[in-house]
Image (cartoon, rainbow, N blue to C red; front, side, top):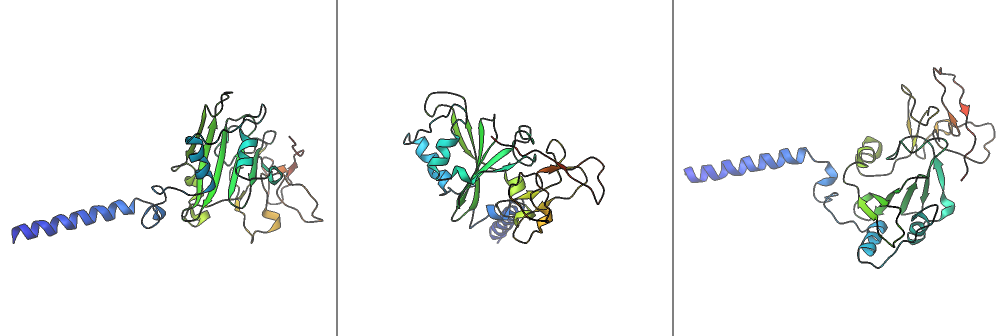
Length: 242
């Protein structure tokens, strides 16, 4: 009887510890998804395995490094380029209105490039895991794939891309902010998560926008002056070109 009691007591303690451990995990890291522990089958993961097996060598462009070869390999058109100058991503110290981050995309992959940086930011769709995030670090070496390091993110990107803004699962996020002259979100202002429901006047804060739109106004191509009021006027920024 005592032996049976010890058995059930031990099982109860173990069950309790397992439950407590589960409470410390994100829901997407629990069964059946196991986001962090699962091997991804997204396009970037396939590319990573080809590099590791020596089946793929990313050519190096003198100006843009491995970016052109990477876009070609992932079937991401250069014409998809959009520019964001707000300091709202991994490389905030390198991004500014005069040095914006370029984003390239297709239906499955996103690639982020900051001029002068040796780090590329990638995100891709996995059929089971959803959005999976990576960084590609390429040292300025001339030898084939030497110095190329493609690493799957294990939490840094998810601090923004797995929050209430993405319904608490790993996902993509488009933000519109009130940027100061350096591109940093202005203290004390709101920011907007952009989707198909967003009002035109709340879109593209911290982004460069081209085209015409009649009398409608958006938040793009401008920064927010110090001490603005509810009826503030943005300072226009000259459109950047590369």
